[in-house]
Structure formats: structure tokens, C-alpha cells
Length: 349
Image (cartoon, rainbow, N blue to C red):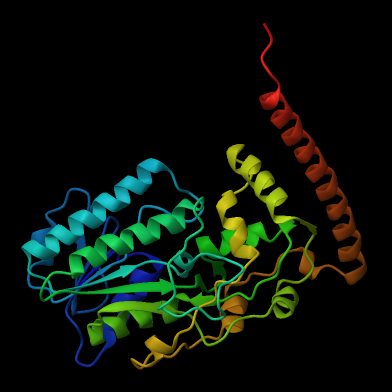
């Protein structure tokens, strides 16, 4: 068994679970930063997938769990996109040279897109429709396709995992943090249900798919979802100005361009329309989430200063914050309209 990205949040958990099985699974843990793992069945290899001899590293493995990634939902550029695709190509080529029959690839439930007509919940049989201008989700789908093309060969199997937003103790994952930022400040109309997946449960899903040598797509999320009212109670008082989705996307584009927010405009629909997923297929393999959506949110959440203040003081600050948001939104809208008018104005001789 080989795990790339073994020193990441999910990778460490996957290695620990594999080493803790009875009998323990022999694991080669690969990462750029790879301190020795405290398990006798784990061999640590410090290597860069971009130039390492992956065929030699994968030799003798019956499965590779590919968790290494160069991009996140909030920091995506064309160079990173191409690098991540190139790394997957190298991994797939090495699977061939080492005759490894199975690979696990990490995608995201975001590949289903966030659309008004999405079923609740979405099953693995649904069409893949990522929001076109959310490059990160489009890239996840591209990587899925590369892996599935490889898996079409004889004697090969590919597990594609599509997790909900991942969190861990006292820390929102990058995607979960991006989504939360979009729901703050000037937020789009719409309150879809949400899902949060604990990193422990994602690691358990990886191990389940490896043990089953599953060939196909698996959604990964706890049972059910958090309704909008419950999420509002969990998040507590927060300054928020509601606005039409198209205006919020314009504002998000400006903030993204100016480096004022970690929220690309294409992520706005994911806070407006539903994209929660069903987990029946994974549960049928014996997997069960240890954390509910609400529990995952709670353990990942570090209360802020605002929540520790008296109710009256919180209300005063929230009202002041809302006023600032209104002014900022109006100014940004005015600047956008003026720039639009300048572009439409015919040139002067």
C-alpha cells in the first residue's frame, strides 16, 4: 500500500488507520515533508512527486492512495492547475510501470455543482455540473476524468471519492473556511442545507474503499445535513447584508481581484443552491460516520471574541458592522457601474 500526501491532515489519519488494522497493512508513506511514522508497518519516504522515481516507490504495492495536492479552493492559478494534472499523469504512468491495479483519487462533492434544480440529496448517479467559473471544482472533475480513463484498462480499478467540506479539531478546512467567508459580510440570497465532514471520517472512507478495492464513485458525507436555521444558530450572531446573487458575484470578483478576500466569485452559488450528497453507496460498504454534520462543525469551531461578549454589546457591534457593510457594498456597486459605463462609452476622436 502506498499513500501520497501522507503528511497532510487526511494522509496522517489514513496511514494511522491502515497501520492500526489487524493484521497491520504495510504502508509506504510518501510526502515532501515526511517525518518518521511511529508504526512498525509504515515506511516513510521523503519525495517530490514531480521528479521522484514513482515506479520504484510504487513497486510491489497493490493499491495507491493519491492524496497529494498542489491547489486549494481559495488559491488556484493556471500554473498550479497544470502542475496538479501533471502530477496525476506521473502517478498514473507509475501505476502502469509498477503494475499496481488500484488507485484512490480525491475529488469533491462540488463537482455536482450548486444548481437550483439539484435533488436533495445528490447521488453518485447524478450528472457532474461544476459551476463553470469556479476553477477548483472544474479541476476536480478534470482529475476524475484522467483517473477514470486510466481505470478503463483491463485489470484496473479506480475509486473516486467526493467528500463534502472537510473539517478537523479546532480548524475549518480550506474549503469550509472559504464557504464560511462567502456567507459573511455581503451574502447572496439563499440558504441551502450544508454538510461538514470530519477528517477522521474521510480517512475511514479512504480505508474502506481500499479494503473493498471499490471501482467507482463514492460520495462521502455524514447522514443528512444541517438545515439553514440550525446553521445560523451554530454560527451565532454575524454581520451580514443580503443581496441578489449576481450583485454578490460582482462584488466577490472585485474583492478577489484586489486580493481582499479568499473567495473566488464562482463559489457564491455554493452558498445559494443545494449540493448536499447521499452516502448510501459508501454505507453499503460498511462505512459509518463517527461525527454528525453538527458535531463536525462544533469540534472544528473555535469561538470568536464576538460570541464571548454580552448580548447587548454584540447587538451594538453587529448593527455597526451591518452599517459598514451597506456603505461598502454601495461604494463597490457604484465603482462597478462607473467602470461598466466607461467600457460602453464610445471612443473619442
